[in-house]
Length: 213
Image (tube, rainbow, N blue to C red; front, side, top):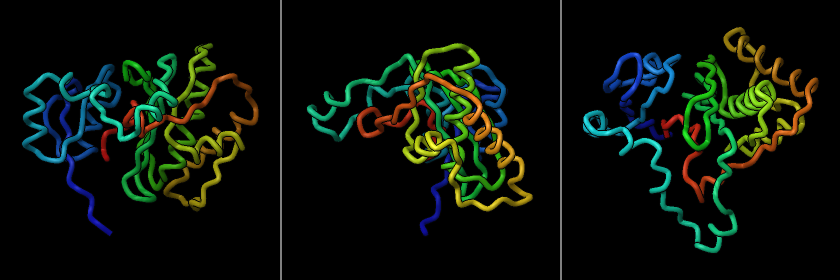
């Protein structure tokens, strides 16, 4: 197995700004900070250079994404519906530390974030993110859609079951308590929210992406 490439994290807006050499250090600066702006880079030099420039030159530039799909394919898919929120999860290892979040699809403003949880998987995170999004939108009486890039999570939500093969342990007890709550929410609530697959090949990474790929 190839080793993971080192990442450096530039924080333009957070409790502290600068370049951080680990995700945990970066997360400490952006957690609970309204309007936090950050991005990962593959070299310290690139991260430092980005810090000195305008964050708008690096963050939220989805319009510059060049799809490999044909024009006919792109026309058929169309553009994202911005009357929506987008959700995503990230995990370090498999299983490993997992977290998920939801953002406004157009502005990328963070609406909620949970984690990190010990010994989780990406699929569990994607499932929890959708359910959290459903509850969030229902609470706010919103008619917005939910975008996710996980077909697996969509199928689990439809079945109202987190069909993971991950074993329950003392280490991931808190995570599975959240899974149980999510399943119970699905079984005891109705919703009209439309859950839509994000077209990564046409639009680039989903807006809720943690930027750690």
